[in-house]
Length: 131
Length: 207
Image 1 (cartoon, chains in turn purple, cyan):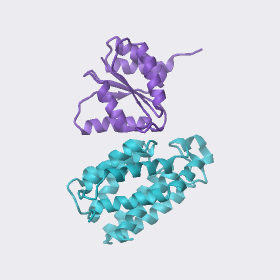
Image 2 (image 1 turned 180 degrees about the vertical axis):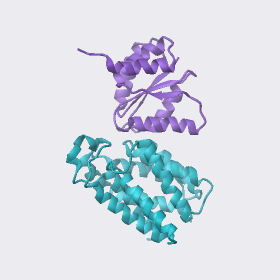
Image 3 (image 1 turned 90 degrees about the vertical axis):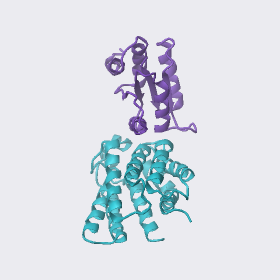
Image 4 (image 1 turned 120 degrees about the vertical axis):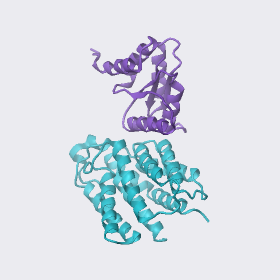
């Protein structure tokens, strides 16, 4: 099953989004938060994200959703750290809002979607009207 | 005796710590008021990670880069982290820094920052200090200057670059939300980059 990593400056946001996404993907164990810094303060940590990617991957690849500012840069740095270590994980970053994107990605992943289809699902969530 | 690279990184760390409040104040004006705090947290962790026995310049720079990627928290983490990592990659196995190595370090750091930040010169970022510094350094070295004189020129150009950031609009990072209101303020990232280069110069001069 394709893994999902939620990157946020806040660990509470990352954990909370994962909780919501898991409700939509019964039994999917590869939805992993990477929020805040190790000491609990606000920020993003490329090493924490890299560890989450490894944890989320079951061999089918990982889709990453990230919030604002440095989150994307840290996620990109995390993917490079894993490449430098010689790990072959197909990890991609979705250009999507993290809450809606995570829910859509979780549904698609739980339905045995591929990295491409999970990524598309997450990114299509941008187009969903709320009103 | 501590290794040269350890002493040089210590010097950078001391400067970042000494300017923590100043950098944060600059960031309060056009950003999210955390640049000094974030950089100080990062360098405190760097000093815990590297050892006075680290004589391999590449190893020490990579350790510093990994730590900055992890501990800074804000945008300067992945940017400086990548710069140190890329510089480290080309210095693996070296314990002495030759003038040509410094040129290569500048270029590796700049391409790392550009890759990570998708920025170019003139966007009110650290690149506006580092790119002119690199150019000034390379020009002096090709004229036959010694490394310290070339690095002095690099520091002057970096400071001119910091001044230049006061005149332009931010198009990257949090400051970009301010648009024209960012004019008149110097960029905190360019400032920390200039401080970094000045710390390296002071190390070279034995200050």
